Structure formats: C-alpha cells, structure tokens
Image 1 (cartoon, helix red, strand yellow):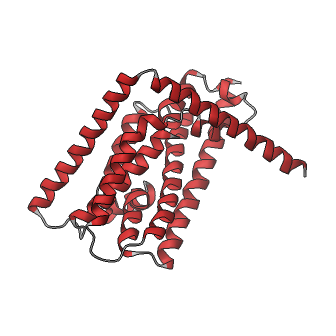
Image 2 (image 1 turned 45 degrees about the horizontal axis):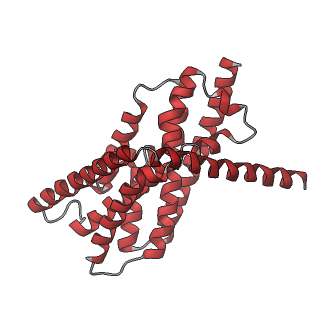
Length: 270
C-alpha cells in the first residue's frame, strides 16, 4: 500500500514538472518568434532537399531495393515524424544537455531532486513548438505517399509499430547519452544526427554485416523501415515478436547502462 502511494506521489511530481517544463519552454519560444521563423525555414529546406534527392534518384531508377517512390515517402514521413517527436521530448535532454552536464558535474542538481533522473531528463527540455514544422512536414509527406498507394494499407498496425519504434528510438537515445558516463563523446549531436539520418533509406539497400548492424546493433531498421513496411504489407506474428523483442533488449540495456553510469558519476563526484 505504501509503495503504491509512493509511486502515485512520484507520478504526480513528474506530471507537475512536465507541465512546468512545457510552460517554460513554450514561453521561451514565443518570446523569440524570429528564431522560430528561421527554424521553420530550415526545416522546410531540409525536407525539400530530401524530397528532391529521392525524386532525382527515382528518376533514374523506378525502385530502390524493392521500394517504390510512394513507399519511400511513407518511410521518409515516418522518419520526420519520429525525429520531430524525439526532438520535442527526450533528444535535447539526452544528446544536447546530458553530455555537458556529466562532463561539467552539473548533473548534480538533477540528482538531488526527489524524482527519477532519467525520466525527468526525458521531458525537462520538452519543446513542442520547436519541432512542429518537422512533425507537420513528416505527416504531409506520409499522407502524400499513403494516398497514392493502390493496395491495402494497415493503419492500426502501423500506429502500434510506430509506438514500438519510438520506444526503441528512446532507448537508443538513452544509450547515446549514457555513454558519456564512461567516455565523453566529442560532438555528440553530430554523432546522433549522422546515425539517425541513415534511417531515411530503406534498410534493404544494405547487405551482409552492414544490414545486420543497422538491424540489431544500431536498430535503424526497427525504428524506421519496419513501421513503414508494416503500413504497406502488414505484420505477422514473427514480425511482432522480433519488434517487441528488440524493444525489450534495448530498453533493458539502456536502463543498465544509464543506472550503472549514474553510480560511476556519483562515485566520481560524490
């Protein structure tokens, strides 16, 4: 009973902190409309470059590794939506702020709070306005590809796989942040962006060891290609099992790496 009450109180604290974080970051963005305008323009340019690149590529070849242009738009839209949602919530905490906090010892001020540090970092720098253009652009690209599909589509299954993909994406983000407890990464955002950008391409274009790496070491396939493929072709029990299994493995590994890293950090700075 006491444990249930304690869990409820912690959840209540997180909800209060989440609402406070949303309010603070939203007010900051609204006070800097020029910055938001430039971010919007930058997002539109980034989306346009991706679309023009793939249009040119498909102008030479009718398909890429079995993916038609509309199927590719579904994948590209999925990528932009997941990327935008991650930037709106946990990416800024784990890739932008956590490495510098660990290096400078500023993480101490988070550790003294009576809440779960990892969960708090997941939403402390929440910024919905910042990523709205990316999310909207992703949805529009996805809808463009989906409305031009001629076969059966699997919307409900896609949504469930999208949730699982975000779960895996979150775990990978925690891992990239936790690595800094063991070795401070130079330019962590560059590393993160370089890895994630490869998810715009169908994983089937890779072969051998590279495909294995992008499936199970850095699970780009399960974060982006698999949900898009499921929307088009549906999913069987094996695909469900593998997707959930990958999610569980990366969740457990990220939790271990983070919790063990916190112990190292405390012992080094305590």
